Structure formats: C-alpha cells, structure tokens
Image 1 (spheres, rainbow, N blue to C red):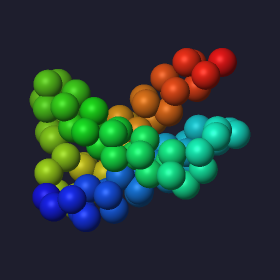
Image 2: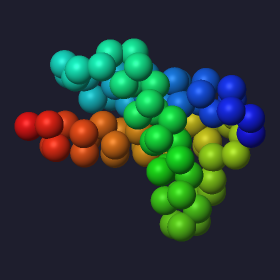
Image 3: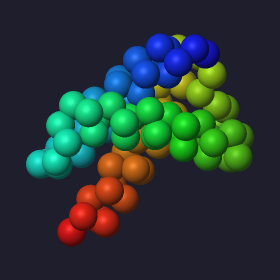
Image 4: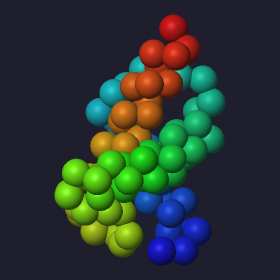
Length: 82
C-alpha cells in the first residue's frame, strides 16, 4: 500500500476511533490523522500476531483492524494526558 493509501486509511481509522470514543482532545484533525495512521500500524502488527490478518489493503477487515489500533492509541493517549 502506498503512503497516500496509508494516510487515507489512517484518517478513516482515526475518525472512526474518535466517533466510538468521543471527547475533547487537543490537536484536532492533525492528531486524529496521526493517531489513525499509527493505529493502522499498531492494529496491523497486533492483528498479524493474533492471526486476525494485517492492514495491507482497503478492505472492511483492514479498516476494522486499523480502527481498533487507533482506538487503542486514543485510549492510551487519554490515559497519559490525564
């Protein structure tokens, strides 16, 4: 997957994670995108370790895995910033 595809998938994952776990976080759109991209990487890594698959294409499974990773990073971000 190219860098543009990762950014778009990360944006989608970040928005979905923010929608699942709303709240006031600093950074806005930029933070959401960065957490989504990092979440896609983390979700892909954890998903491949657990046998769920990896994030290597635009598929429903890839979006779910990336969103799970973004959700995890958003949760950890909020824990650290409290």
